[in-house]
Image (cartoon, rainbow, N blue to C red; front, side, top):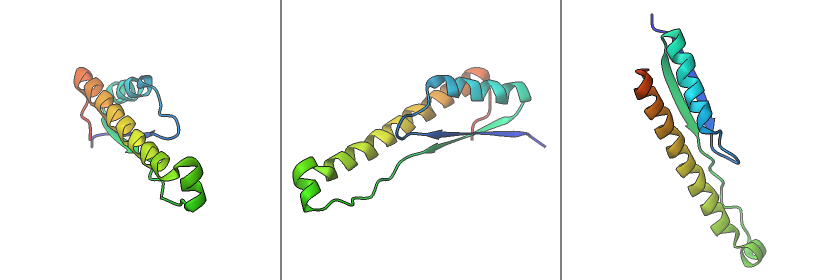
Length: 92
């Protein structure tokens, strides 16, 4: 039976550094395990009202935060995948 290690990568408010990816892969490699990586993207609902839209343009800020979270998540997964490929660790 193959061992499975997991790493959760939150993207909001601050994503973890790329060192988390290399450490997760190193642990999986040391154990001879498969690595399961999951990104947790933020999904901020639009809860704006007329005043918040007028003063802060809250809907735009929410869209920006959601997009930044998705972009960070994609970059984190690419980093984990590259590191896993380099170390010949199976990534799921």
